[in-house]
Image 1 (cartoon, rainbow, N blue to C red):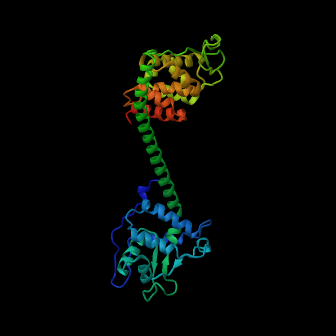
Image 2: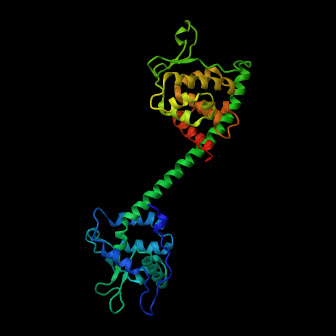
Length: 357
């Protein structure tokens, strides 16, 4: 649905002294009324809710007063059966509407004219030019006939609000991550001083893929001697296919270390063990050559987060604006929901490489 196509900002109605002015599209408005035969599962409250949320999207020319008047008119439909039968004429006078809104009758007349010009009501008059006689009154069938438009507009606005909410959350997460990385840098400096400057370089345990399996296995973990602290095993952890795919798609640093054949294999439905091993080796090289992180910190993170930790390494070196990859990585590894964090960041890296960030 293209909401802009439904926007109507008509010129003023052509008026005859003493009679209600009508727009050139008045005939279309009457046809809209005649084509409406009733609607089920509708209540006055639900219609008021839709109008309140979505009418400004369909008719931005409406004033706040005209929207308020329309809601008051709808609230005069007391019987839910009226929506099913299509008998939707109400009879509040201009004086009553003026009292309810705190405005004068002239403002009410302008609001009603604007509502009719935008095809939300029909002002019906008797031969004596009165709305309170016979079949006269204010016909609300145009509102009922356009409920599907209001629902579509409401859904559009909800999606837009949700998207804005997610974007705001992502920006807050990035800000918190940046602050955390700065704090982590100070923490790492202090730890380095306390340990006498040891572990200046990073050592990443080598990993291999078991033949016929996609499990990531720590090489040499079973060779630890009694009493020696060993890195926790993650041999039961399956390769995270979604994270692997995002890493290959998004990270330019990773792509440079893989062959064209490996890249094609990794974005396919069943990557080979050899190609997955190449990704592990590339992460190991990146961690060893571009990031300074204590091995004990990395080992703990790898056991806790698995493939999300591998992805975090590529985010730290490829994310735009990261001045301290080690601090940024350290901050990410402390996240309880690291997988969600790296998914968002990998998509952001992919967008920045495409020129959209």
